[in-house]
Length: 141
Image 1 (cartoon, rainbow, N blue to C red):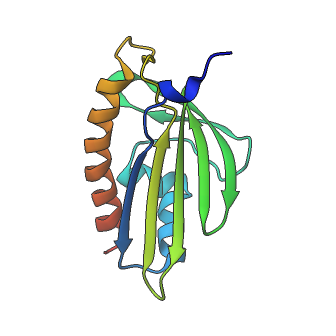
Image 2: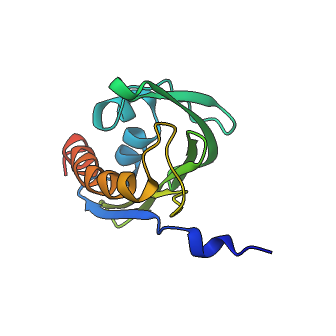
């Protein structure tokens, strides 16, 4: 039996304290309108099992599926064939600790465009910094 855990690359994790109440942050991360402002245009609906698309511009429309909704604390979805994204929110008394987790990376894996996961993971890790920064600006943090 092959141990596939050695093949796994670490999840991308970004945590930031947002100076906004949890309900405001939840609306920003769990509505199509909110996600469009700080991440990508989409047809998201906060319903487990809902199939939606993220409009990744030159990369086309990425198919996604909502896998978990726990308002106002957690939202997860599958992104493409192998990735998953989770948004975790923790109420910090008028502020919100926001954690983004992007997983599904493997050392031997490649995207549908043939790029190695190791390369794309590093690029996206840096990209998420700016995206989470846009979320922070959007909620007024």
